[in-house]
Image (cartoon, rainbow, N blue to C red; front, side, top):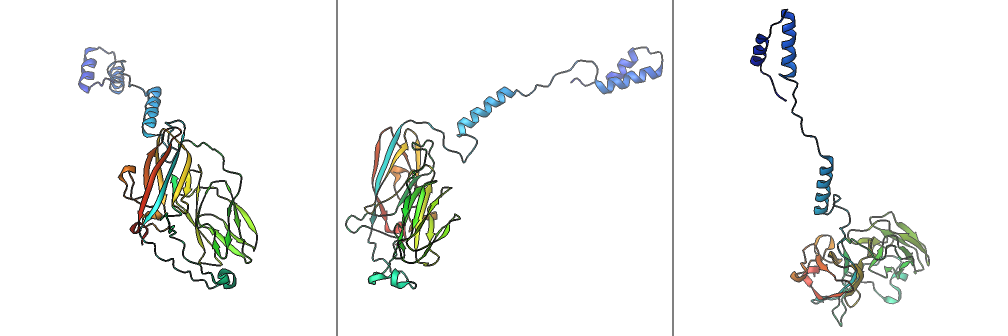
Amino acid sequence: MRICSRNNADDFGAAVSFRTPLMAAALLACLLTFGCSPERVSTPGADAGRAEQLRATLSTATGGGDAGGAAASTGTGWGTLKGRFLFAGAPGESKPLMVDKDTEICSKAGVKLVDRSLLVDPATKGLANVVVFARKASRVKETTAPATPLIFDQKQCEFIAPVFAARVGQPIDVHNSDPIGHNTNIAGSSFNQLIPAGQGTLYKADAETGMPTMVTCNIHPWMKAYAVFRKDGYVAVSAADGSFTIPDLPAGEPLEMQVWHERSSGPNGALGLDNPALKWTPKGRFQIQLTPDEVKDIGTLEVPASALGT
């Protein structure tokens, strides 16, 4: 907009002859208010189409506006990850648990219950109950959870599986094979059920766990286990010989894997190992990328005693 100064307005008024002072004053006020001429310099308007293009470009470059959403899919096909955990040290003898209730069942035939937080195969040094799972997957091959229930049993006053993994929505048969009642309490959920002798009840996790969550029995406080629930099912628990396998992972794109162990001294049980080849971090994470139909064996992973607080 062109602005008119008071001097310009005065010059203009002096150059024009008016019949009455009133008319001159009115015209002068109009010029001071609206400018010296009817010309306007238009202000550029927002280009809505261009703005949308810029937003789309930024969203693609940053992986989308939702930081908590699934990773963008960049690959095709599926692959398998496998490996094996070995304990590099002497595990020592397992400590006996303090059993002071229902001893006629819980210490039947003189069998003493012991701490099972560190299970090492004497012959192979295989480390059991290490949890490995994909932190985020852009694609899932099997989109529905298994319909067959996973059995989570308790007998002689201990959970048969110290650590187990299931998929969100998969039925879990929380069973009690003892002749006495047990209570099963899954931390972080509303499941806190009394399981009568010889019976069971079904449980379905409706949300995944960031890390394995504790399972306890309020009646027998020494009873403890861990459960991990994942939406995509890309999770494994190492067997007695330390081996694990996760099939049907999305190939052709980077994957970040999380590793956990009950005895780990890392944050929230994260198992940090010194393995530069896998870009292993203190938070218990490593990086892989599979090719279609590849069976990637990351080999033997030695876990030092210091990593498990022993």
